[in-house]
Length: 220
Figure (cartoon, rainbow, N blue to C red):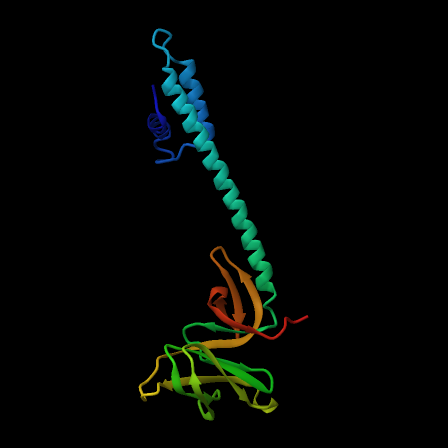
């Protein structure tokens, strides 16, 4: 009497040279089970207990196959829903963690400069530079908590353009506090990939999972 293991070995042997280690599906399992019944020795028929065990194994295999199909459908539905939600980000300002995220694009009379503090800081200093690397503004923040923070630069309409900035911070004892800058700008595009959803901010593609703050209303 063959069990699942033996049937699997037979399938592997039969397909050797074309597809090694191929998994046996429920249809192949059922065909082999029928063939086993048709070719049994009349003088030594299949044991009822073993046959019942094989039927139970087939039922479990079918249930797992159906479950996998259901999970794939749910995953596809979740991806679609995430895509619809991501599309609503177009035209909105976001801040996201990203290496080299100290790029700032000013499109109005003010701009938010975002960063993340490793721990509470008594003083935060933000220096803003124009495209030529010239310091144009210094902002200071006081008594900010660990985590994501924002300082607003009231720059006026004449300051629109591209800038970079750096952030330094210190705690109540005057010790340096680690700071990570974040990219801030308007979402102009949403792109779907096999692995994730990407949004375009300031001409750069970032993962939607890296977004830490969303502000403004969607463009119409």
